[in-house]
Image 1: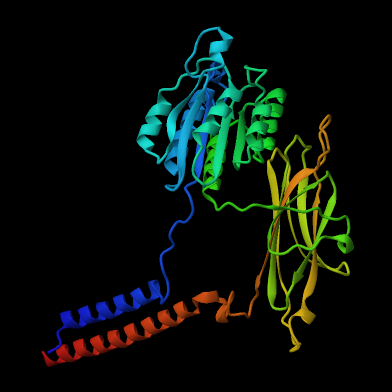
Image 2 (image 1 turned 90 degrees about the vertical axis):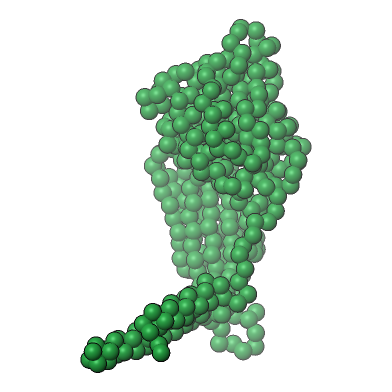
Length: 423
């Protein structure tokens, strides 16, 4: 005899089996992390000037500690993170001793968040600003392994230990070819400090950011730590032309170039019939620029007709401006092959940055172009029927689940009514 409990159990078992089939389709396996663990060394200036109370009503040191605590909470598990200080221990006036004042506060490795936070909490603004020596030691901390390596330097002043010029130190690190990137963040910067930190970052392909608020510091450090966990892709250098007809041909990939203020750069992409072109560009304002600017990415035909464009604008200090676009190529009716139906698309990158007084306009601004040509709508490998991509089987499974659940529920309802009438 079928009881209500047995029927309910059978219904749940059937739905569980269907759900399991949806969650783990044939051939699906869980993604596993691959590659060596990325390493990040946070280098914090703990010199006496960090006592200044000019960041959101608190000292620079307090703002840095708050940001570090939030960053430590958000650090991805796969990242091996360390913390190095400069100017944290020596309080005296002897320059030679002060310029050796750098230590590894927390070793680069698997992160114990509680231990790292406790170490940061003990810091107190103290001494000199030996940026150059700290960078040399920080690079040593990251030796070994094959993953990406990144130093994030946070400082509120210029190096006080020249002639060991931190820019020269950064160039020396870059010349070793060890793939180490140095990003710099300046707290409440002045012109000289901005120039020095920008020089350090530029030497290794890193970024410089001016920071005046605690949330800006937290967001930027989090962004840089997360970036270290991203797969490493080596960009290809390319030189864009001043016209579509002269443009270099590019395929799917990541490219770097430089674009002068107000300049247009052209690149050419062949898009097979039925494919879709996806492109994005980022232009870095690696120096001081005037307010009100923008970046535009246009896709045009070889005859100059605009197909689509993406653009972005800003009106204040920024580090990077990005724009993107998508263009699906028409399906071919020509059975002789795809080559005859391949569409040539020209990509134009333009910017409306203008140089502030006294700022050098050469070399051009760093430009990063991403190009991807994928199967377009209507092809089974990218977008399937009903616009659901590869998830059409999910729709079918849901429909089947709903149908069976409805049938079973209707049968249960009729059985209950029959029992009620009998009683």
